[in-house]
Amino acid sequence: MRLHELALQRWLNATFDVIDGYSVPVVFSTPMDAYAEFTRLWKEDNNPFTYLLNAVDDDGNKIYQPYPANTRYPVISVTRGGWIPRIQQSYGLHVNRKGWVTTGADATMSEVGTAVIRNMPVAWDYRYQIDHFCTRPDTQARFVHQAMRRFQNSGGIMQSWLRVLYPLPYGPQTIRLYLDGSIEDASEPEPGDGPRIYRTTLRVIIEGYYADLDYKEVPAFWSLVLSGGTADADALEKAYVYNTETVPAGNTITQTSIPETET
Image (cartoon, rainbow, N blue to C red; front, side, top):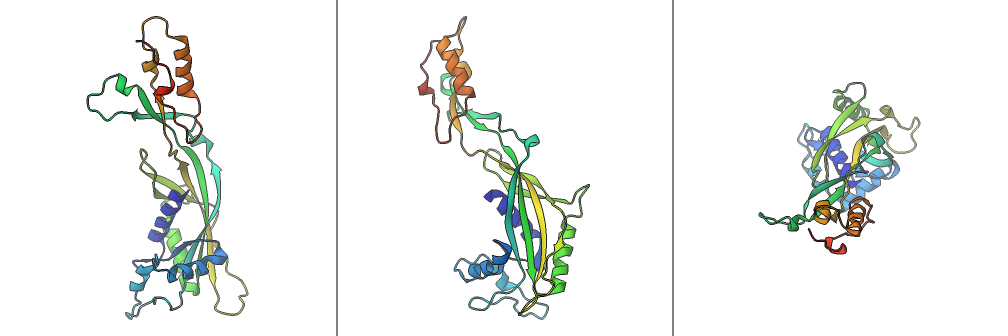
């Protein structure tokens, strides 16, 4: 899940900016807590938004001031919206054989008798709600314009693409992101005291995957029953069990669990 959220943040950083070259700050929180979360992060020693301190307006004046100065809008919040299985693109029923437990350049057949396997990825749709908050209508218009521009290269559905850094052996993958519904103006029609806050909401779905991080070591089939004539019945049965059964997380099957047979 965290892999997709980081990829989404990178996509947001590349899509929406305060001024050219300076991304709108992104926080992972509910819409109600977005500004408070931004303020909390701004106060910290490892403030992730220090790049904004270099932003200047057309007159050369700094837009942001370091703490204890007040933080300012705009800010984007990202809220998790749920996870939907995408059965038609799931492959978790199968396993990939990734290699053998050996590092030698001249490995013998006995040295590659244990294989490393890992379950194939399962497809999930990751849903997120994105809210943009600002105090000026022209800033809201800029956000909507940038969102529309990002989705302009679409066909049949408003979509874009982002790069997700999956763990090896899969590595970086280009994943589809698409707009779920419409871009909505969620501003309060009659604001109370204080400045009016313009809120824009959109929901996106990332067509991601759950990549299994655990691997198993199992005896290679041929190392157990490679012989002429009838195979040892007990070894044959265990070969099928150890190569097809699901192993609980945290458990490892090794070749030492199975009695050796003559070849």
